[in-house]
Length: 311
Image (cartoon, rainbow, N blue to C red; front, side):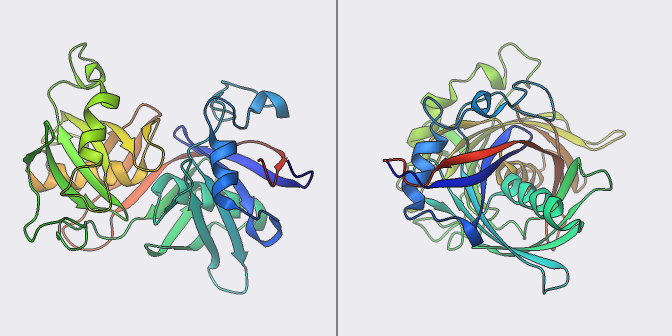
C-alpha cells in the first residue's frame, strides 16, 4: 500500500454520500481502484476514524463507505465559476451524470469560493447549479428527460413505455443516465407497499436486461398524492443504482426519472412533484419543454486523508 495520503472531504445529499477529492492536487494514480476500496460499505472510509458525529442529521450519515468518489476541479476565471466533475462509482466505472452528486459539487464549490451560482461540467453536459442562502440546500439543472430509444439507449427502435421487462412493468427514460421506472401500489406508509418489495431481487434482471445495452438504473415508485388538490404531487421512490450495484438512500437522476415517467403516464398533475427516497425529500420540476430541476438538502460530513493507492 502506498504511503501517499490524499486529502478528502465527505458530503451527502439526502443520504446519497460521496467522497470528494480536489482533482487539482489529488495524486491518485488509479481512480477506479481508489473508488472500489474507499467506497466499500464493509471496509471503506469510516467517519468514526475522523471524528465525525455519526448519525447526527446534517453532519453524517453514519455509514461506512460511499456511493462514489467525486473528483472536482474549480475554474474561477469563469463567471459563474465552473466546476469540472468526474464521478467514479464503487465498481470503478464512471457515471456520466449524478443529480445528488452535482448538488454536493455545488456545496463543495461554495465552501471553497463563497459563490452561490455555478456551472458544472459533467459528461452529460454543462449544468447550472445554485446553493441557497444558508448553504443547506442546492438546486441543479438536470437537462431534458428523453424517452428516445436511441438516447436512453435501448436495443430497439421504439420507446419502452409501461411494458414488462424481466418481471417488472417499466418505462425507460434517460435523465443523464438510463433509468427503468416501475410503479407499484402502496407508498412507504403501506406495510404491503413499496418498501415491502425485495428490490435487490427484482432489480438486477431489469438492470442487465438485453433491451438496455448499457444497463439501467431501476426505480420503484408509488404515487402518494397525484397533485390534483392543493400542493404538488408526492411520489415515494427507491432506486437500485447501476455502478453501485445496490440500493442507495437517494438518487437524483432517479427522482427526476420517476417524476418524468409519472407525467408521461398521466399519474400526476402539474410539472412539480416531491420525490421521497429513503434519504429524504427532493423537489422536482419537469416542464413540458426545457430542463428539469432537482432541489434538496446537502451537507458536509467530515474530512481527512486516505491512501492514494489502497492495494
